Amino acid sequence: MQRLLVALLAALDAAIAAAIGLVVLLAPLTLLWTLAFGVTADWGALWPLTGTLWEFGHGVPLEITIPDALLVALAIPADAARFVVSITPLAFLFFTLLFAARSGGRAARSGAWLLGSLAGTLVFAVIATVVALTSALEAARVPMALAILLPTAVYLVGVVCGAVRVAWEDGDGGILDRIHDVLDAREEWAPVPAAIVRGAAFTLVGVAGAAALAVAVSVLLRGGEVVALFQAARVDALGATVMTLGQLAYLPTAVVWAASWLAGPGFAVGAGTAVSPAGTQLGVVPGIPAFGLLPENTSMWMLIVILLPVAAGAFAGWAVRSRLVWEGTPLGVLQRAVIAVGIAAVSAGVAGLAAALANGSMGPGRLGVVGPAVLPFALSLGGEVLVGAAILLLSPRNRDEVAEERTDRWIAEMSALGSEGPIGGRAADTDVPAPDGTVPLDGLPGRDGAPPARR
Image (cartoon, rainbow, N blue to C red; front, top):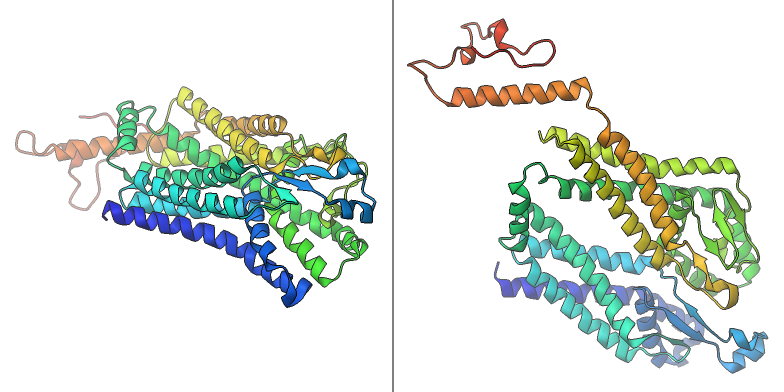
């Protein structure tokens, strides 16, 4: 495919990704705007609100300023008139990441992953700049530089990851192939990078699945408290709809909080609070219905849940080791140790980044500290994953695995011997079957899996 066409298609993908994200916000806001204010509504404020929320969904913090008239009407203290909201609704960010990864993979399959990635990122940056310049709100201000850089960075990470994944496997005729050749020159280290990425993917999927299941179980067990908080809010159908949509956008954020709870450190819902398997210490929390899912108390026996990240790491180690054996590339202890450490490091890095996006401030005063702490979550998850992965990757090989390796080696040797052609006018005796389709007994591997002695 021509490079210009690849660049144009990548640019179109970026424009579609940004447009879908904006439309997903604009469509329900338009409907709610009409129902709330009617046809006489101030439609000029609709686009700034949409653009601001789109930026917020990509990690840009909001500086909220409550008007003086509203302060007096609601009897809000003056020191609470200005605060920052920085906990990201990760649903929008994940959508951009996945769409960008899809675009990067398509550019890599077309043979121009670097050009496609740069073209798509450039178009997304232009769209982010236009949104930032045209969507300023007095009540919710965003830093101009972050409003441009953070959405662009999200798209760049997604498109590069998707492109590199495909180009690494299929080749790109450029820098990735040269890196691949350097690794292939050292055969014992060549499979290590791919094994690390594969194992980290297994681990993160396992931890995210366990965290999502924990959220689902909380909904089943504490759904009554959520309904009670909805009723206590005393909002009409329109208000309940807005609250529900907002909480759905925060569902991936809740999964990150649950993952931190499973890893052990837990999370905070205000300064001086803690929600963890070791115990729950809560003060007065906002009456947001989703906070009804928080456990009122926990037992020390709940610390058993930290075995789930260990199990995810063990599953990743088993999957990587099985793949290596199936491909016939058994590695030494040092290489397998590096794979285990790499899986834990990548998992910890992703967990830390997710925690950085899922924590921060959600209001004035003590609500300035909400969510999981980055360093404890990353270190805890990385350590637990390392234990599980190391158990499966560094354990001695069992007899079946060794026998399979010896059998594969013997088959390869016999195939190579047969491909050498006649020696002295006839092929090697070990390669000639008997007329009835059998082979001599001394041509079979021994009982211990070792190849037979060559004649």
